[in-house]
Image (cartoon, rainbow, N blue to C red):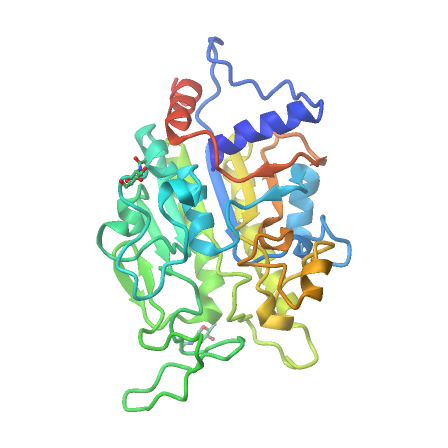
Length: 384
Ligand SMILES: *[C@@H]1O[C@H](CO)[C@@H](O)[C@H](O)[C@H]1NC(C)=O
Ligand SMILES: *[C@@H]1O[C@H](CO)[C@@H](O)[C@H](O)[C@H]1NC(C)=O
């Protein structure tokens, strides 16, 4: 979460003996910086080792590696939880699941969501005059008042939950494979146990379903277009903006455009990683063009890779949980082993966040301080 994170960043830098003089948000100063834009890009099921800057074996993230060299990279940064909904709920509220009530993933059949008495970062920033948008996977409740448009986001474009939680026209790669949606009079092809097939995956724009089933092959392109368009429009509006992008990558089913000619011999995962990297690069390029000096861009992940998906899962880097795997268990997503919640994290803000700095500070996403403190931070530090 932006401001908590900045605070964490400052604390982290203080711990590492680092002080960056430009990073002064003192409330006594007469000349205050304008309210900064905040762009948060959250990858899904991405491994710590999927970031080339973290792990030299990975060669597929040129844009992210460049962002690391132009900003700060946190190598001991942990998501608030090792599954999707709890991690996202903490990111947006600054409170851990035991406090905000989200300790498990929401299902397609869930009628609830992030409790409505919780305050989101988007709500706080909107009160401060921000234009707010969310693009991508929400997964914090999809009925009634749990929808992102009622949780502080002026604009929403994306899927309400994970991309494997519904059939799609072109199912992509997954274990077990989800069947394609049936044609009008077709029958289900023996859906696997972990595959939701009753409801085709919908794509929303605000409160409307604009595509169902989602075409996974064009989703990344659509996200890039909407993000770029939003940044363009928001930056000409004269108001600061929050853009929160919940990528479909690297969650299965993986799908790349154009499809691989020889998926058996080419790594689908790596191709998908490159596609994600390119999507992030497009967003960053737009920020660099229209709002470079005044935008904090933060990239991180919701939890570690999903090992059960075998070669469709990401890289743990060195955190492969030797002891745990010897017991026959998994050290990844859904566990409290390091591979489950130690995630890539980059902060980029030219002139404010130092370039090419690696922080080894132990940091965790978004657990403290409370939203109350966040609110006061935002109003003292951002209001002119
Ligand atoms: C929301 O309500 C629940 C249940 O009463 C409570 O546990 C939680 O702390 C409340 N959240 C806030 C932010 O007050
Ligand atoms: C899905 O998107 C791909 C890539 O843009 C396109 O080639 C394909 O025709 C689309 N499929 C459908 C059913 O619209």
